[in-house]
Amino acid sequence: MTVLCSRCGYPASIEQKYSGLDLCSKCFEKQVEKRFSRAVREYDLINARETIGVAISGGKDSAALLYLLHDLSKKMPFTIIPIIIDEGIEHYRKYGIEKAKLLCDSLNLPLQVYSYKDEYKLSMDEIVEKKKDLGELRVSGNCSYCGVFRKQLLNKAARELNCDKLALGHNLDDMAQTYLMNVMRNEPQRLNKFGLIIESSLEGFVSRIKPLAYIPEKETTLYCFAKKLPFHLGECPHSSEAFRGEIKDFLNSLEVKHSGVKFNIVKSFSNLKSVDDKVYENKKCFECGEITSQLICKACLYKKEINEGISAN
Ligand code: SF4
Ligand code: ZN
Image 1 (tube, rainbow, N blue to C red):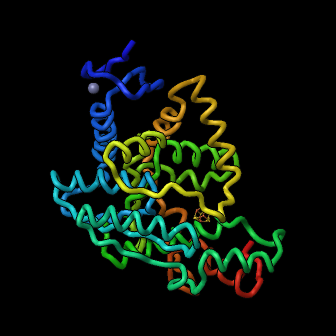
Image 2 (tube, rainbow, N blue to C red):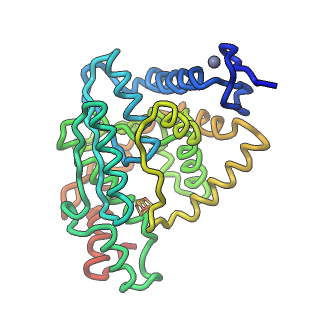
């Protein structure tokens, strides 16, 4: 028997356990767009005439994010600047950059590329090589370095490009995973930065927004397919996020038995508007001038560790 769309009665192609709905492709697209708009409205993520930097990677989440923001900008005037970070990972990031360029061209948006090599004089491939010489016991996982460098460079890029805010493609699954990881690692200071908007009055800090927070990961992929958006589906060869993988599996298996748990986690927390001021206490890194809560920022410490073998921890 053909299952029909709960909204319009056409044949359904998507079964949504957590909502109890069966949806056809068109009604599914509308639902994604509504959830995106709701997040933007509920938290005032974007105001008219702002300049929004959009962190893209060439992957599915940021492709959906850029497309949805571009669509919104037709109804409300604001400027979009897509930014991609080239970590310098051979056989991986260049494919993402190619897809990102294709998407930006189709939307008529100029892509801004910033690279680790230009900024830190080290590509991610070189960092991984140097780490091997230092010995695994003395250094952190690859993603720890990469995450610190990417976050700092994105903020710098958004600032240089005069962006009022920086939009990130974190989906519902990412948000729920990050929340649980922070709780399980007992990192309450990080929970301060969990929310759909992270604002700060600090000079040089560009507020970050997460308009995809109500859209499950699976659905950002389906949305990209439905809209025929170009994206790269590859695995980073340097990934070291084993703990996140375990949390992801755990949440997915919970979701099967108790549909809606991921939504509940994010909803319970998204009532908070996060503020970074306390964390950073308005300090500038002694070495590079970027924002930090310490005398020397983590990116500079990591650079020293990689170049001189001085432990950052
Ligand atoms: Fe960087 Fe880790 Fe992402 Fe690879 S998986 S790009 S190393 S953060
Ligand atoms: Zn329908």
